[in-house]
Image 1: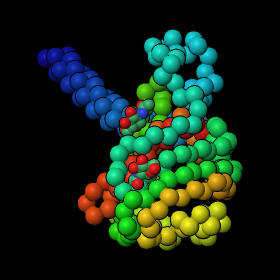
Image 2: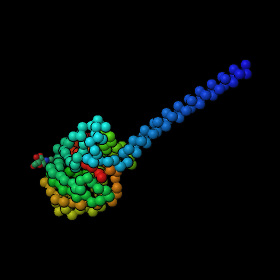
Image 3: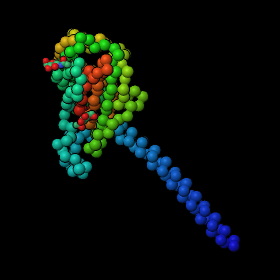
Image 4: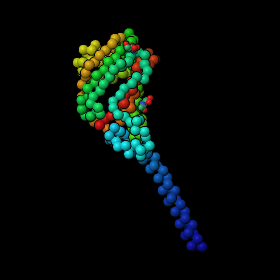
Length: 217
Ligand SMILES: *[C@@H]1O[C@H](CO)[C@@H](O)[C@H](O)[C@H]1NC(C)=O
Ligand SMILES: *[C@@H]1O[C@H](CO)[C@@H](O)[C@H](O)[C@H]1NC(C)=O
């Protein structure tokens, strides 16, 4: 009798232990997934242009789909558009100075506050684009008013002032050419390939949309 009770107690104890173990393990797994994803996105990744052919074979990705250089494209919007753009150095080195050249036009009489904006930032990991979440106003976020953000940025670089565009709302109808502007970025950013899409809305319509593919080294 005594032995039976002992065995039953041992089995009960063992199963309770293993239940605890699995519950513990389940929790760990979920936490690790979130953490692993954030870690993946904030770690430095070797840009695809520097990867050997074997890497693309290993992940089963066509080498033709890799990010090879800075590129931009329009993605809609009827009130303003970029017609030409170049960014150097390519890959972008941070911290550092970005040289930007851009041409564009605004067809609306005036674009003014409020200008709701969205940003979507995706980073490539093992050949797959992963969206960076919005954390503390940084990442793939929505903003109430782009004009307000511009107001909080410091001095407007000379070439933007002399192009007539300026750095603050309202923006007036016209064709603008910013031949070269240097922007100092004092902080680093995890290296890798990025797909960034920005939109501006004005009076409930999509005013402008720009997509950038870029590499940070
Ligand atoms: C910008 O200019 C180009 C070329 O002149 C024109 O085709 C386009 O419709 C203009 N876009 C806007 C939003 O004014
Ligand atoms: C980049 O992201 C945009 C927006 O999600 C998407 O439409 C586009 O196809 C992406 N580009 C590439 C090359 O994956």
